[in-house]
Length: 116
Length: 111
Image 1: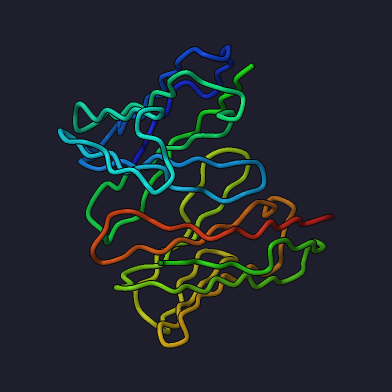
Image 2: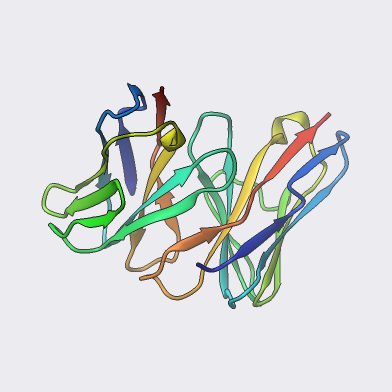
């Protein structure tokens, strides 16, 4: 199947700093990528849809200014958690579809963010 | 609002048992239902279902969709400890690229 690479896999940062997470589609082009957040023992919560060359579409309740998304090319989307706080500590996962809506979504390895 | 609900939330079985995981959905413009297995990190794809009544199989896993009753089941026969994971189902709509995930079922298989 298609490969989605996410980096870093784990990051620890201090409160108040910003953290950037990268999501790359390695063997296909993805005009759309998705960012999810997952708390322990809970399901994936969609945060935003990242669109290449345009603004991201955020889900209700997700702060646009806090979770900055940039989709600068067909193979790269980035999520920046700005002014991180301990409550932002979570598992962040990106996904992308290699084709249209009839194809499955492939996931990156996820990034475990710990804010201390 | 689109919604996906899975049951049970957790399940503990012994190796060799057969399990059935349930996924019900309430969506407008349903297009597809997907099953994923999540162990420690990112979910891995299992099945995508778009048509009612057609079973998809992969080894000991199988899944079927009922579009009239709005649910899907995932069966695992002769379970093994390696089947221990969270199983997620997700629905995709016609008018959107995004997937809405269910709550997940945590399966634990003991020797």
